[in-house]
Length: 116
Image (cartoon, rainbow, N blue to C red; front, top):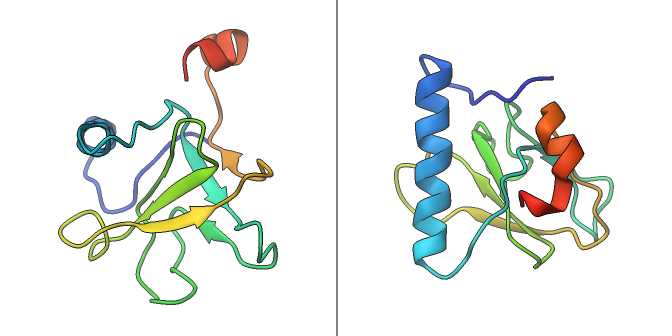
């Protein structure tokens, strides 16, 4: 599945938002990887799943974006009211690496960690 962000008008808008949120977190001392995450389950609740385009299991809000932190085993779950328009994103710990990425490009598959 290719990267997408619900509620955006085009791929360019999704890219701008994705880049902008990464920059905002980096400015707070929380750098993220270039990996585009489609879904993640927390370590302590493997039965619980957060997936882009689906409802947040607790709030019912639409999950718009998931960002992976650099080397922390932590993911940020963005919804309209948590991280995008206001508030802070939901943190999810997944140190076991069970996150599922959107389809990676050939370049990303080839260079992997060097691009992250």
